[in-house]
Image 1 (tube, rainbow, N blue to C red):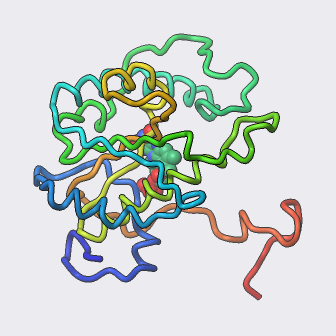
Image 2 (image 1 turned 180 degrees about the horizontal axis):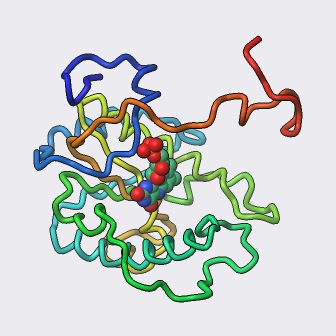
Length: 231
Ligand SMILES: Cc1cc2nc3c(=O)[nH]c(=O)nc-3n(C[C@H](O)[C@H](O)[C@H](O)COP(=O)(O)O)c2cc1C
């Protein structure tokens, strides 16, 4: 991998520890050959049964991008309005999910959404649900295991971008507007939108990410057991 600032090689462990979300990009364009090469690396991601149910739309048309931005904007407004109440937006365990007690007042701009037309690369990643084993779909909670067959692919795209001195971010805003987006993008029936990935040359490459230490999320034998330590 190469560091976008210095051009120096970045070792895999360093890349794992420093591939943060990039939302600001230089004006440098990313050519189709590079996008193709990124996807050519990313396709080696794992998926349940190795079924590789992903499909990618490279969104080049400015009016399509603008329309996607228009679909994402109200989702962002709702997200912020809910977050401002101290709750995690759009969880599946909230008693009355997604209902705002007060409508959002004013707008806080989102540079990705508002600048979507100018982002060097915009990819919408979808998955054919008939290829995804959803092991937990019959439980009395929202299923999560199916995501395991698409998000490693999304993360591989970001790592493959990083390996070329690029950066980006996975977003899920568009999934809340899936019916409208499906029509605009020709999403086949039975498919789901997993995310929109924005990629470009980072204005700044982070070197330190804020993450919890291992001891805070790892326990011995049980999830309520003793904290797992190295010694
Ligand atoms: C499943 C998933 C969904 C995300 N959705 C969004 C999103 O909708 N908008 C956004 O700006 N960032 C999104 N992110 C990026 C996260 O905000 C980011 O990874 C996290 O805040 C850590 O940021 P850092 O790498 O800069 O420390 C998403 C990340 C993941 C893994």
